[in-house]
Structure formats: C-alpha cells, structure tokens
Amino acid sequence: MRSRYAAYAMGLEDYLLKTWHPATRPAVLKLEDEKSIKWLSLQIIRHEETEPDHALVEFIARYKINGKAEKLHEISRFICKAGHWLYVDGDFVEP
Image (cartoon, rainbow, N blue to C red; front, side, top):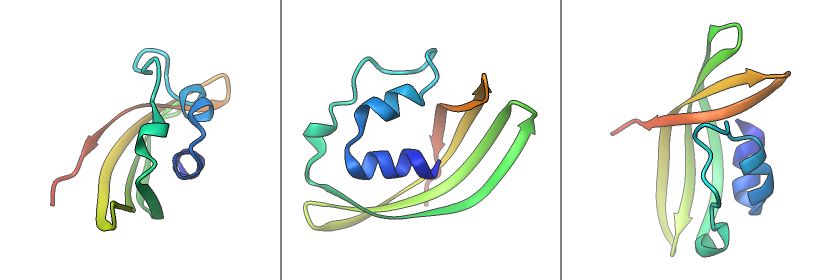
C-alpha cells in the first residue's frame, strides 16, 4: 500500500499498473492529467489478512487539489500472486 501511495505521489504510472491485478487493471491511468494533485500523507488505519493470499487495507490519503485540502478514505482489497501483492479494488468510506 505504501509503495502504491508513493508511486501516485511520484507519478509512476508503470509501477501502479504493474501492481494492479490484471482482472481490474485499467489500460492507462493518465496521471499526467492530475498534475494539480499534491499528495501530502498516508495513514494506514488497519490491515487484515482475510485469507493467506487475500488482504484488506483501510487507509486515509490526504492531498491538495488546486490548493484545496481533501482526503481519500478507502478500504482496498489485495491478492498475493507469485509472492507479489496486487491491488484488486476498493470501497470509499464516506464521512
């Protein structure tokens, strides 16, 4: 999770796509269109291994877009394939 957050902050689209499960991975992310986003912090709320190769991660990522502070609160699902954890999808947590 932390490496994916860092990849978003640094605009590393290739890494994000590589760590995304092929069943749900988009063709492109177009991070260059999100230049106005400045990622500020990542807080891991919880991590839960639901099966030996499945996990949930709840996090809050704080960012600014066009100078306005925002936060992304999500519960993400991951699957481990060949020793590598892949992002599958997530649900937003509403305030």
